[in-house]
Image 1 (cartoon, one colour):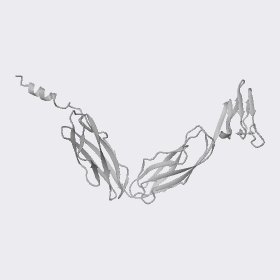
Image 2: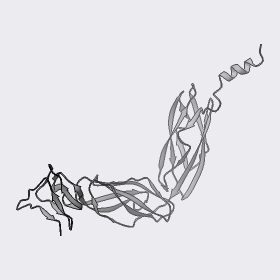
Image 3: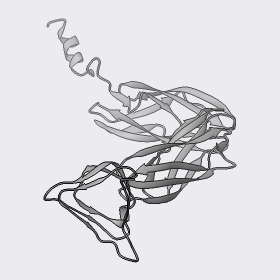
Image 4: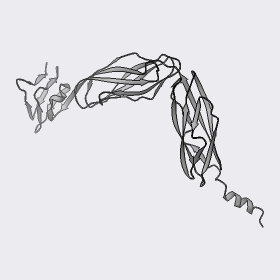
Length: 287
């Protein structure tokens, strides 16, 4: 019998070299800064490429980090999820390497960083004034929030009472730093907007901050124009001379205000101003 045959047969049943048999879905994990005596969690997913089920055991974790279920059963050529829990009782930064070991074959390591904090949050500006902006354009202003406690501050969620104003949470602010949080405005309608913001943070003593956004949205127009200028999008601010081309009609609805200063409206087609005594059309141009 060929002396290499047993080695060849054995190799046929070994996992392929270089192929990971057991893997975390992440290489590293940074937990959100967590206030002492509170809890944060993260879902960890393990994948098993072998054609047999594996019981996975874990090592490398210690208080204040824990996980369940542990051990974890991962099906053949499938995946399973376990929950990592962080429960700090002191202000500190914890760095650990979590090792997963399969009962059949394969290991993987997940690097974990978690910070226990006693944060403070201070809103340095309670009214955010966007000034005058144009409709149909996205404008961003920045809201300063300071981290005044011990350890990092976590800005969890930012919600507004008007969908025209949006912002995204999930922001970590280092101890002593100030985050310039982007707040975005977009609307297709003109008008004066007063929009309330609610910000939730990891500050245990002042977890909710509130701010007010002020926006004056106007319609900016210039060049060749046809169609209808409606009262709902008034006032209209001219950015250059307006031209109504031949075979084109511009209709201005009752109540519309047109601000042109020294600019002009030149009409080669038709211009209809449908003002009424109660809702006049006001045009200031050519001045």
